[in-house]
Image 1: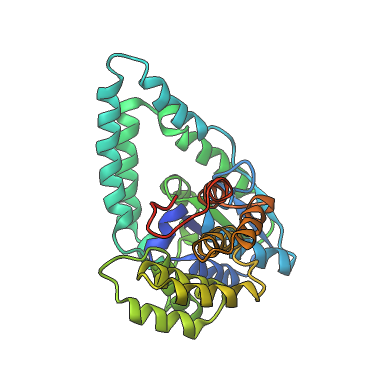
Image 2 (image 1 turned 90 degrees about the horizontal axis):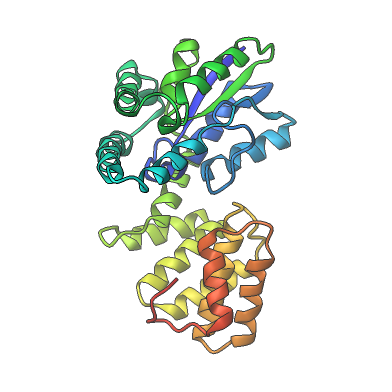
Length: 320
């Protein structure tokens, strides 16, 4: 029995304070699932594909709730289709049409999203209209990643599920799956303190010039987790205060900074750069090597580590 369907936004979760990683986790808990089913993927998506799912997956593992993929392959053909277009004389014109379609889609998905908004019929139909425009231009198939076919197959598999299931689905697949289970749409809710804290952390990850950096620092120090302290150090670094940044980073280094799983790579890479700047080359090299020894590190962190091992970093240089 499908009890709830939650669309995932990939990296876009960072820009939606009312629909972030903590929101997904809280809604998963509220659904009380016996199983978490993945409708858009033939396997568990990587952390770089769906960074907001790490907390939900960790919770499911701790609770003994299995996570199973019911999706089929085919999404990768959409990227292959675009690459193939580049080889044809008229390909650029088609790519320009796809870019225009993506612009409208981006505007829709960048507007403030909440669970209630994602469950509204108007939003679902608006999203479907954008997707149908692409399908009408290029046909249902490689250009769309076989979206309709994959979701029809997922719906067939889900319809016979005897367990109470929480279903995760990519937002672009969502309008093709939800009609099969309309009662499982997301419902409006009030954010919890954990969601508000996650929203502040996400804002700090996306630090902008117009943000109130002082207020962000105050909030991060109140949260006080390794991730929050790392982000506080990042703000000091962006503000041209490397001494304060190093002090905070040294504090993080004395903690268990394993969660979230993308934090160790980012932290050690940036810590290495700070140590280099202050002439602590041996410690910096250990930090860089620590990044490369991790079972998972974001590509940006690995690039910083590799560059740092080749050449000592100095502030004022263009960061990797």
